[in-house]
Length: 510
Image (cartoon, rainbow, N blue to C red; front, side, top):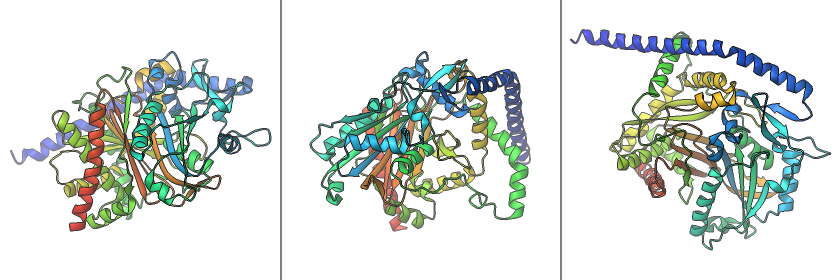
């Protein structure tokens, strides 16, 4: 029996590869069947460019089209958006509406003297001849997009509670039809005791920017906000290079290249089988039923320095520390709801090489498991995650998902609505490192930054957003109400705080 064990393993691996090959060939057949649609789409794009250039802007690309169905009024997804992205920035000083209008005109929209940096900011999504385009809004008014809000809270805790509620409302609010899908909100006299102590003006202004994913991926939104509005330079964010993959020797590079086809087939098989696997408590029950996105975050940011100390003491990466804390919090929450699970599949967005500075969807995702068993020792968990991250850097899911997204995103909107939905991955983590230098808005200091994003269409029920600015790291979560109640979201947020403190204490003892 012992001698048969390697043979059984070999047979299992062979069956997995055969299944992956079957899925790959099926995908190629679908591409061939869809080829007339791709040719027709190309012809429509050329036709619009030649004869309707005065009315339409750029065609929405295949990746952007995956999200654009939420902006078409005849689709159910338009009533319960899941593809909203946004950012919150706290400014030291008073920002007037006139100042904000001038800033958006100069830095985003343009005017008679200035060329528009982001022309989509004055355009809306329109379906034409079966496909989606940016269409110029002849009635564009910036006052439709800039608004003043007031929070009634008189204390920091009350304002934080109101801000969480406001973020939740903005995540669930549909964008008006025939209007460019972005909005900016200003909250004057924002209360935050810690920031007010460091303030040079004695007054804080909260700026909230909300956009739809059709505009761009999170990396482009980061460029548009931090570089476009705040004039703060960001370094290019690129996919891991060969050194980061650990491929320093020629033999390693050759081995990786030769094994790539087998890795691709294996990943393809695993993902396709996941669509029929057992669902966890974090999978949306009915991914086509309109639902509400809940929002929560710890009231205080985490110290980047403490995370650096933790990673150095434990000999792991910064990302592994953060993900291990989130994995533990999710595991505890899931264990309290139903049968605990050993691991949860998660995705992390990755920018493609040569990511442009303009608004664009130019990203893919990498997919790997998070160890979520509640009883797992925190140090063991972070070590496991470090190993998973190392393996994830070598897997082929970024290429696989890019191929799938481009294949399906070039179809008619009604076909995208049916076919292009995440049916496997229950959780996601978006990680955007902000600038290490101070941000400024028309000379006024940016004191803290944060961002939020929806869970996207499909079965994903829990998402985390992680963003850093100088020595602060903000963590927030979005949860579908099919998965958790508001009180359970607050409980999971409290677990995040507990697990950060616990891992730091263990690291200091090691």
